Image (cartoon, rainbow, N blue to C red; front, side, top):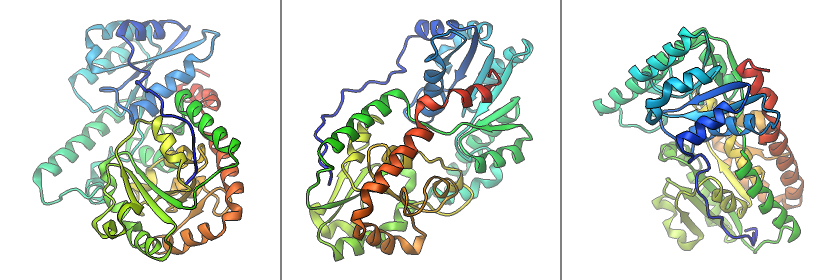
Length: 388
């Protein structure tokens, strides 16, 4: 394990602004972009609304400003409509309020875009989605939920002038379903996440990448829906722990390590979900970040975020060769790719080639900062919004 001697940070969501503060942000530029999301959260909202607004507002010229709004702000929604030139609806389900908001923008001849980061808008794929997420397909209530959720997103999407998404595979799915023009803005790290990550990495560099005599594998899950993905690597994890006493496993988030690994005692560690900034510290301690995914159309739409969140703090990723992971990782150069049957051999080879670790770490970090740092996204965002 890497020894990262830097304390956790006291974190509070930077988007916890009053409505007055958010209205003031929107009004500050000559061209104005309003992001709408049902209610703020630490995942989709952060990546697809807050991060975008942060980049747009960083320009001190006052040319373009942006802010974000929620259903709870409905009492002043007409002010948002009057101020904004462009509306971006982020992964929000159709309802009477959303319809009203879109019609108000439409009547003023203003552009409406739909930003969606997952393959959850076409109900013909509901069975695939439920199976991938290990939903109970025998429960009628789960079918009702997923058909409602997917269909309401798909309806809202089709009402817009265009769409924004995270990768080209998903963009093709959106275009086929909706007939709309689609542009790609990748997920990326905001200032808070990247600043703390840079501090962590610099501390590791200053120590000469000091480690203990153990090798830590990490699995980091932001939701409980990845049980079947994690199951892909369970046999390899059991064999690795049995064959090499130096190996330890850290499972972080909502996934349990698994009963079959309990025999390894405290070599298998469990940590709860962390906020997205302090998660970077936890990731920075492991040598290898494991990113298994099932192979299907739904998982091919997932973004690269688990790769770049690990790369920027110096953890080497081993990943399933999904569309985005295979596009981000150059096998043996900035990480490793492993087919379902190859996880054991790939991890063993990666551990054995410890002399290559510094090169992989540096390659991956440079790649992550250049492609997925907030400071390189402005022109991409402006072009996607049609305000470049």
